[in-house]
Image 1 (cartoon, one colour):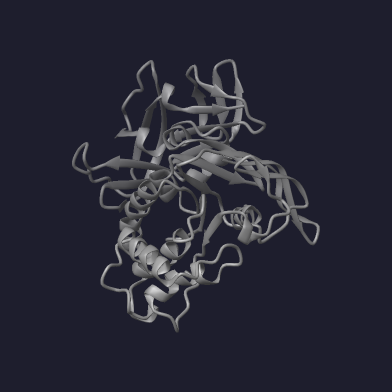
Image 2: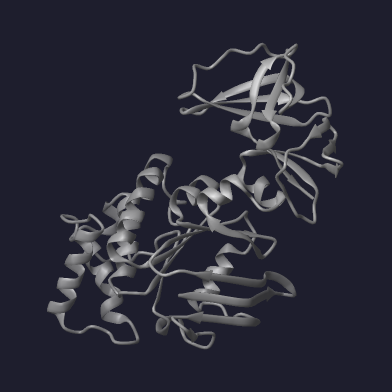
Length: 354
């Protein structure tokens, strides 16, 4: 549906997008994940037509749209701050795009009313039609913004951190609601977020943007289990990473020699990564098995997160090492501050880059 080839964009000589290549499927939910300053919003604005790329080609529905105005692209945009009109009601906000768009504005009031009514039902706002947008909740404002875009029947919807202004409980609930709405209307959503949990939970496909380029594209479970570079693993915020060098089946690091398994990934940067939830905490005197890796650390503190407990250890080089224990597996154990423990994992669970 949407293809970008070698798309670049600079501001005052500084690159914002550096040779972006990507291809998005029809009828899917795509998450775009990246750290602050990676170019996420710029990429959305280039796709929407609010910004013109300096080079490269954008194709949508098989046609080059570089020179097509935003209103002529058939692509909707939902802003992070909702951008609703405070002087208009919920119903009037949703109808605004139909009545005022430059191309094919709908002037038959009966048609407008019917389409707005259907959209209000689709996004779960029935009964709130006459309310001012200042009299509804954040989640309801998000639905109004989405309905205002969907009522114009775009072929794709771009969402710029749409849950960023909502509280944690509402964000969690809106995740499932956004997915359900997308499935009912059959439109591709491209959802930009800085939250790895949000991206992995929502995207059928996940794009990771790093250093102004697409660092990885794939299914959520592939991104989570097999990040293709140290940069992607680091940004997922669920891996301990060691710098060092791989030689003869051993990764030499500041934590000591780490035996490696069969799995390794080519990378310009050498690194060793082990996911937080793949690590066992054992007494200091515990001995590693033949298929295991063992290091020692000093217990610092634990953090209860609801479904899990995250424990933090300081290694001999000062590095903080994190272990995640899911409470569905076992009751949490108590560890003694400033005491030494063995930190053990299967060597086949580690990812080695180099």
